[in-house]
Length: 369
Image (cartoon, rainbow, N blue to C red):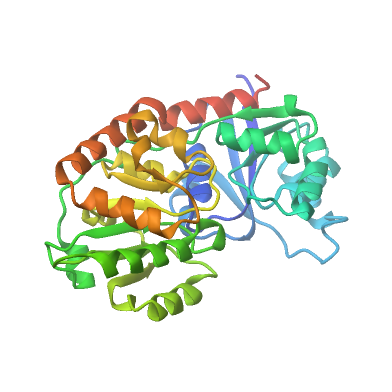
């Protein structure tokens, strides 16, 4: 019997987020006859560890000293004990894990970059540039991100490959609204819901979204006026809640925190929106489009490639609340066009962002293709 390739994924944690969800999808979909999967978290397991033990062995790293960026001895020992053929790192753990993996004698290192700041701090560029020299393949999740890596991080651009994110279009499909979310949030059936799901961090631009929503509500001519529903958590939450109070829209903005009922949220949303300052290929956007929602998103990173030419009119410039508010208004005022664009969004994801295609691409990288 041919020996399976042992792949070790390393990530901060398996809690909520698009990157974490993708890792879990790769592990679940990898061919078990060819690959033996392991996952090492540097912090804690979290939500996406549920059910993953059936597909992979899960490990939690020992606490590391403050010198681990220079000499990650305990991490190298853990990796040596697992003895992987391939170490696959994901954004946020690149340099330290790459150094430890080389100390442990791992023959093949792959890193997936899921997104970077724009502009990218010089400290990150320097550290990740050093890591890239020890990495066999650096994966970008969009062409735009690949170009950024080639310009600012990866000296040898021949190491870069593009593997576009994918989603399960059967799991994320259009569903009839049950009404449960609206009842929970006390939102009447006829009230339009502008919905978003993501990390409440500066790079995601939710401050721009709150500003845009205040403009939309101020200019909305009749009842019922839209509400804004945000699923997700992050360091910006308190500041965003304060901003909503200052702009007089706190009563119309719902901060939900992380939720397990994404399908229910999608079915309740009238449209899906993002106001990111930077993106790779957003998993949240792919899931929402796969669920048949019309997207209104900023034209950054891989967002333009995701929506495609047929939905390019739903892109807005970043950092422009007035443009975002106008785009929402246009979508909410034209039910027929919005519904047609939702159908086009799902067709786009089905055609170009299949989950199995993404997993097969990673499998090829694991065996050196």
